Length: 364
Image (tube, rainbow, N blue to C red):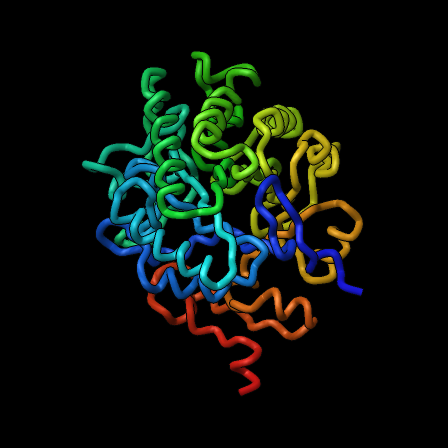
């Protein structure tokens, strides 16, 4: 009998051939000038078209939204054209691919910002974290707080990113609301100390999320939009006094918008799936009407169990997809996995990016 993990799933009007999702993975290989995806990206994503769904690496919606070198954008026509080559190739290989829309907020450095300006954030609180700059890893720069009048510009940038993603031929979009970036910064009371309509109460702290989701679903059918949260992760120097309450409100807002799927990092990003006392992924999931995509260190057996039990509809795999372009085939056959080379994760060329062997190549 075929395990449910390997069977199709329909989300709205999009049918996936299996429930294995390629998680968004920052690899820092866009062009140094212009942050444009190119031929290497075409090969990389096409190699992984066997995934039920590919979620692209986080892609900035504006020059201000950039926090690491050579991450791709979706605001220029050159970037749209570069991504179009990726989507055309993935579709020709039978795959499905959505673009993750990203604004890093305070997780940036002046050397990466237009005219060397400070990064923007809900409040002028520096993130105690590192960013990848032209000179190597460096501390994040002190940000400035966005003026209330600037919020409309941020929302417009997200809307334009959604429009450009459609022009680039994607099957949908995912809003990056996780891992300490701009949307996450507005949601959490540790990083949001505003006193206007975007800070303070839960209603206010989720306001930007709601406005961005309204903008995205004005461009795309709601069932072609997903959102990613990391409720219990401190990644990016994040804290919240009551994450269960905060993310219950955020997830409810996403559900009210009619989104196709909810993508949760369960526990610490890239770390333990242990949750704080009183927290429950199952309880959060019940707040969302669409499909549930679970993420964080799942292996084959855990993924099969989660989908069979109904704990998740889909499972996202990150590092295994880096080293195994044919991950779905390997998981289905219960075959050994290539081990990823961490030294080649960020930046570089084809080495550690498109040169991992498939099962067939190994056999040959």
